[in-house]
Length: 238
Image (cartoon, rainbow, N blue to C red; front, side):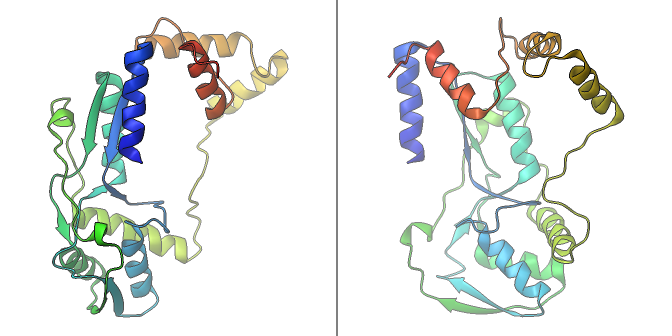
């Protein structure tokens, strides 16, 4: 499905001259992670078991033959920034370039949480998860990007976040960061009578276009509106 989408994007480029940057994310994990994903749920489930005082964890398949390429979320964000503002019409692997077996992951979790786990190994029902290849990040490293968070540091950050979250501390998954300057700007816009358009929007469009090196930029109200406008711009009407 993902490669099919890549092919569609490249086909649009050949037909309409579409500018694009494609990032292939490997096994992303970390603070505020999706707790139900196929690849990341093992980390959450095992850490959650330890938090609940349980030392028996379920492992699907041979833990020595299942390899994941676990890349921490902050490294992924930096990869997106590097690839977006420094390249065009290219495909990047966002990876650590070092596969980690489930056995190695379990050992790291034990070290971080100071625990001893018992593996309950059950058959793997999905054969496509038996072995995961690591990605070649040469194109990204040429842009100055590199992974900064190793597995132990990443698991430590994730463990600290999970503890705070499960303890119902004031550690919201999503929290707006609004300072006094932004509050004053909002009040100024409301008083001006312009809500969806106006001089502030025009200023933002101009400054954003300058930032990304584009002749024009258009601010829209949603991702759907952005997609619709993009398709119209390249002549897709049906």
